[in-house]
Amino acid sequence: MSIKRVVVAVFISGLAACSTETPGHDLKAGAPRSLAQGEVIGVPSPYDDEITVYRGLPYAAAPIGDLRWQPPQPAPSWEGIRIANTFSDSCYQPRHWDYFVWRREDFTVSEDCLYLNVWTPVNAQGLPVMVWFHGGTHLSGQGHSLIFDGTSLAQRGVLVITVNYRLGPFGFLAHPVLSEAAQSGASGNYGLMDKVAALSWIRDNVHSLGGNPENVTVFGQSAGSQSICSLLTSPYGKGLFHKAIGQSASCVTPASTEDANGHERGIALVEELGLDSLQELRSADADALISAMIASDWASESRIVIDGDVLEQWPSETFADQRQAKIPLMLGFLADEDEQLFPINKSLTRSELDGFLEYVAGDLAGELKGEYDADSLTPGQLQHAVSTDIFIAFGMQRWAEYHALAGQPTYLYFMDHVPPAFHLYMPEQPYLALEGGSRSGGAYHSGDLALVFGSLDKVGYDWTAEDKFVSEQMVTYWTNFAKTGNPNRPGENTWTPFDRERLSTRVINSEPATVGGVRKRILEILASRQPL
Image 1 (tube, helix red, strand yellow):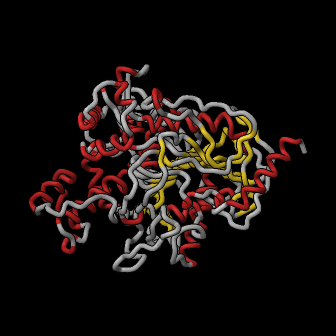
Image 2 (spheres, helix red, strand yellow; image 1 turned 30 degrees about the vertical axis):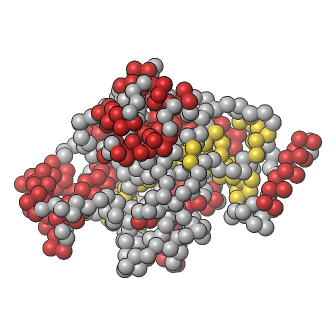
Image 3 (spheres, helix red, strand yellow; image 1 turned 45 degrees about the horizontal axis):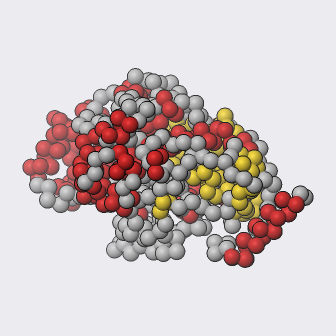
């Protein structure tokens, strides 16, 4: 062994003595890997010595100073060997947020946050690559949360990567001043550009880490899924990924055409700051930007905007024209996505509810209302349930319809298995007091995350054998799809592809089955007002 590698081995072994994450776990040095920026060494996963983790690899330069609100720039090189044993800070976002399962307390944030993390089997070569984009309404979240630990997926013979990307106004602010200064003449969607930069870095470097750059699957939930949907329609994403999995959010439901480029909301935010020049904006205090975001109600509409560059038109129009990326697609939603996902308008009157139902269903408003348990719901609760179905259930099936019509392999799922509700991002304090018990939230939005990552041994509580059975299904489906573009095991065909006639949908629970569509009449009524 060279002197350089001996020094690295001694250094890594010393880390075990001060590690708070893996007490008593011996860290063993592997061979350095050569990346475009320099040499790097990973460390064993605390859950399996045969999985190597590379934490905090920079895929772009820090977007600070003059690079704030700029497309991501190449990451700088380093001298010597980088020890990839530490996750990066989370991207700048609000802290101390107590909201259902998404509660977060204080944690370190930074604008220097464009890093990714890799889990790969020891001695891997040419493995399928799975790239995770986290959710959080494009306002919060991080790829290195323990719930997203990639060990269990990597044990199935894939290389797993999780990505941090710019959030809130740092990642999506659009404003005339920023557009005028940009080479493209556009502003906003920096968080989407970060994902493109991460995928470009993966294309150029993943072979050295044991992955196949020609077999990359992107997968994401909520805002991460919406980003994937958008990148399928963007010229920037072309050729950077070869399969896609979308969980619980799409980009194809009609959005307001007002302020499509986001400038009106951007102007309101900047006015709240009391600034107007580009130099002042780029030197503005980060917490002041967060405060202005809240005070100006900047996040009231889509963070992703139609900037004429990253997104040239509404994604629904690109899908309708069949000009999206032609790749295999797997997507789906959960039974109770409306559980505390959006605020309920408690002051909504019955006449206002009737007007809303007529707007979304026309002459079928009464029939649509009858598809819900209207007698037990307040007007606000019923509007909330219908709105969630429009955004998620209808949006996901419509996305599947568009993709199947383009002749692409498409698989749709529906999870009605009810997991326990817990603090997803606070593994040290998972307990969540619900009046009806840990499973009274139903199959809630984000209830699939631990199941997909197979991280039941790392987060949450009150897991049962049934939960583990469902998680095994999902881990198998997701990794099979990443390998072949088909979630079925080799030689099986229990999950048939989706098409508009059969509406084949895989129901994921303790007794999985493929059925001819779910919530069929609700989605038919909604589709009558929003035809393909």
